[in-house]
Image (cartoon, rainbow, N blue to C red; front, top):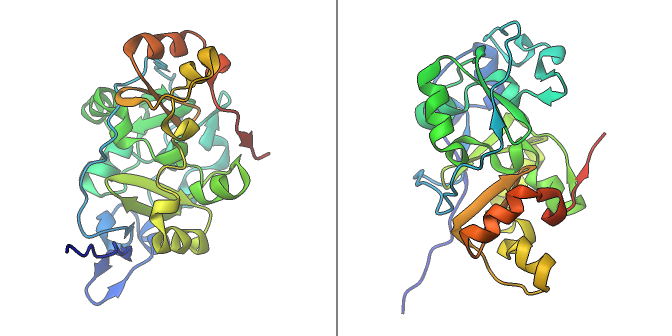
Length: 250
């Protein structure tokens, strides 16, 4: 009989102690494994790998933020033209692929699913556009703990981040992060709309048919799976008709 060991979520350590993400941010752009928590020792890629949804557009330029710490990105710069700046202006590609905090530039930015993502250059931006789901934080950087508990979208804090199965999760505080580490299975699919059932099948025929990652897209931070490319196309033509309603904190 096979006995499966329970996965443990542990912080990545440097030397003999764990270093908080807040400490790394205070220092500046350092290797992320000095402070960012990890839900497991390996970092395998998520099994969910949807095709990039055609919902992006390039963002205009604005003044570049500094890179020495969280407060180096002024509050006014975290939301420009009504569009929130993801990861406080840090590069999502550098975070996931290089485990480093690197401040991006508004000259190399893209808007994807209602967030502006900034990059230090075209190479990182093109990598993001080729596979945004690899780099976008779960629930667009909102707290999955808060969403599961209240149904509200509340922004997480980059000082309280976590890698789990290749994805980045952000939380409001360390208490939330520890809750996730204690029971990740309760939260990892919090951003999966309708628990994986096709939104189009539910709306048009009232049938709960489980979708496939092969036919997927992202809308307002939630992942949507469909039974066919035709369903996915219909969703993208009018996502408000099919999308799952969520609350947004003021």
